Length: 547
Picture 1 (spheres, rainbow, N blue to C red):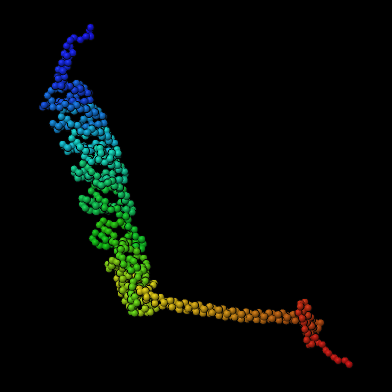
Picture 2: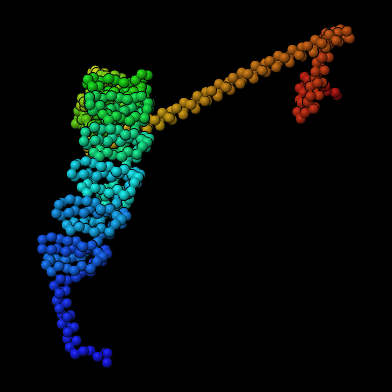
């Protein structure tokens, strides 16, 4: 039977297997894949075996480690350092990186891709040189001894601050923008104007942010300081102004405009004050020269001028009203609170500037002292009867105080007064009430008298008109009668002349005329409702007795 084994064969194979296992256990065997490495550390050296292969391990070894090779994609790289020599190198993908015996690989990094408006700077730690890579390009990788010069910042790629390479954006300048750039290696400063895309050099940094060019026109000027000479200059020529590398813009100054009634004071570099007035055509508009400033006047305000915080750079030279209020005491020890107003103006700005720094406060305080002086010499009753006269005296008795300060007081009047104490104020109110009642009664009586006088004058005028009417009627009646008489005479003459031939006797003609006139009268009466009465003489009747 062929399947039957010979005696002792199974035992022999077992012994052979035991011997082979002993040999394998002494030497060892490792299967290394195609993406693996075997780091075999001998007693004195280290050996690296790359796959794919099967490796018999030597009997005398310290350690045998199997590691994966590093797979680098086309957009990846890593830095490898030799621990024995200290040398470094950059390995770029795509490749399957097999390390050498004493190599140590850092973290795999992504290659840097730069857009058109991006750049990155590298510093070589061995030489100190700076390399600048500008977009638009990809596959940007630092050398083995280069580090990033700039700290990582957020960029347009969306990487958060502190993560990834510090890609910086170029400076995009518009037509009206400029930027100053300083070269840290030389200290030189240059100015770049728009429109352009500006990339920083290896040692260059921005001096401040982007800035707008200054539009210089009829209402704007630029005050400059030259950093080399320290001198200031004022540029007024119309242009879009970009400063040079040595120039610093101190201020954009507006054109100062004065109205016809305004004035101002400019203090120059020599400390002298120059006065400008809007009434002068050559001083109405101007720019402040270098090393000059507008003088600010600090005036008091409030009815009692208790706050000195009114800041003025332009002075109104028109006449104006200014109210005041202060306390004073009469000779009978009544404390009053006076209220009033000035109508005043500044007529000499130079004199005002020379003698006072608080014009409104000085005017009110001086008037207060004068009022206190005069009110203290009169009683309350005298003050109430003549406070306007007191104000007039205070105004007229100008002891050169106002004129010395260039101020003209047109009028000073007291508009009201009241007692400072409540009890006195009550008594004063009663006095004022009685005075008011008396004045009202007098006014009423005057009104009644005026009405009576007007009524009497009307009656007189009416009677005079009646008399004139009567006189006119009388004159008209006389004139009418005269005319009627003339007409009657003409008729009589005509009748007598006509009947002269028929009736030669003048007496007979006159008797006939009378009879005709009576007949006309009877006709007139018979045509109306009138009654006509005849006297015996008119009827010519005779009475006789007959037996």
